Amino acid sequence: MLGAVAVLAACTANKQSTEAGFNTLKNEIGDQLKVLVAEIPDDQVPRSFPDDDGTIRFVGIRDWTCGFPAGSFWSMYELTDDDYWKNAAVANTEKLDGVQFRTNTHDLGFMVFCSYGNGYRLTGNEAYKDAVIQASESLITRFDPEVGCLRSWDHGNWEFPVIIDNMMNLEMLIWASEQTGDPKYKEIALSHADVTLENHYRDDWSSVHVVDYDTITGEVIEKVTHQGLKDESAWARGQAWGLYGYVMMHRETGDENYLEAAENIAGFIINELPEDNVPYWDLDDPNIPEANRDASAGAIIAAALYELSTFSDNTDQYLETANAITESLTSEKYRATNGENGGFILMHSVGNMPKKDEVDVAINYADYYYLEALKRKHQIKK
Image 1: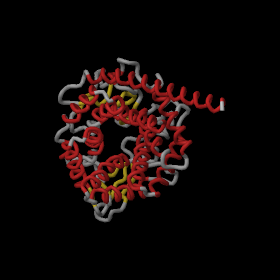
Image 2: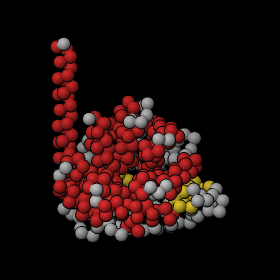
Image 3: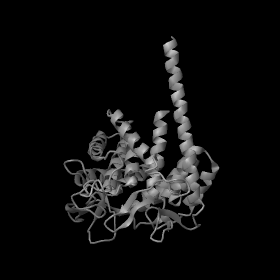
Image 4: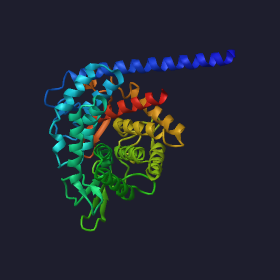
């Protein structure tokens, strides 16, 4: 009996210690993000730091990353129940008004669901719901039934380019079908996911970045990269987007094919992670171990693995890896000292290496998915 009491006491003490550590981390992150909030102008949002002139790079509502700051502030509100973060989230959500009507971008899930979508989930504001439904309506104008996918870019010399990143915009479409009762959004999401699974993935479960399609026949024209090292390599953030996308698709549909895909993608990624579990920007960079890391890819992978652990029989492996990634990102190697790094949380992300744009910087989507990973970790431990 005394042994059982001792075990219970130890478990209680460990839980209290974990909770105290999490609260300390929340406070530190909050203090850091308040530095960023203080710098945000009324008509723009922070994208990365440092820019070429050593300052924060701010962008408007035409930028694909414009929804992430609001999403991060909504996460802080969810974690703290502090109206300071609600006010910051509202301000940086509502300044995006108008983006939901854009039909010339595939990134509306990032731009609108991360901002307005989280806002609706946490406040029930009907105007936010309307914005997400409108964004879904705008997004499906980019669907080609012959190809079976949503078009990604309107630039470049491709006929109909589809990038692996586009998997991240499907959650909004499934949500829109659930909210409206109209199946068209979900049907498009399922088609896009299925065609992407067929054509983006190699035999080893790595993903190519861009697949270009013939709009007459629906056949693949070519498979190339735009942000990775080379056409045949595994661009880290692309691997992360795909993993997250198929974990989400299984959650939303219960389809075992998506779960199997997510497990296979996870297996490839985990086998390629370095000792500290934060991936190199491209997993095939010949300069490894001197190549740049990408904290943003690590954060996305961790968030995905936490959720995958709740569906899969490989729970322990996924939890262990997600915890290891999150622990590294939380360390001083990747998490900025308070008041530095422009107020962003994480350092050492890579945006577009081939263009030498945002290399080894802080980027808003790294912080967004890091906070999501922390939320999921905390929820699993409860």
